[in-house]
Image 1 (cartoon, rainbow, N blue to C red):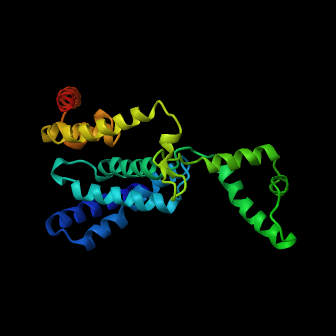
Image 2: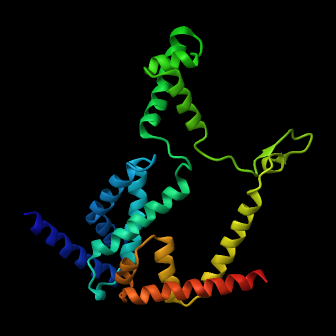
Length: 258
């Protein structure tokens, strides 16, 4: 029965993809998203256990990847849509987690305890008309004071503080945190930002196919085999394009520095 349903899903998907490529109808695109939402749910269920983001947020982000796959799918190449779409869905979620997720991952148990502490603190204040001490919060959570302090510290430091953060009184003139706290790596960070800009400028100078290969491999984290399937070329060709592209980028970026 499941095989029949799977075949029916593939048939419906291909039919709708043909109609969408001919008409570009948003209504048909929405039908395709709804029909293949299971692909997004599968990825979202996996990643929700690897991060602190909500399942609903991951589902929405994954749908953006699914829409991107719908827009780029080429029926004439004969690929299965599900195999084609999964890297786009996964890539969209991974990019979201890199951009939006906490720089320091906090265990899910600690996040749950941190949430419980809010309710405990509220109830304590209502009952005793004062804020509870650290020891009283820990007792309410039924954990040690040391663990509670570790949880608080981890939550407070879940995001890095920008070195550009202004400090000081407005009347005296504010300065940045980076100027007050010596950091031997700050210059390296600035150089890395400059390198990123040069890299973006160099990428646009590459021929289209070579740039596509590099973007799939290094920006969307696809394997060379997956890239070969996406672009309908051999794995050997992908490997050569990667080497050629990296060599060209080095030349272009060195030239930009001079």
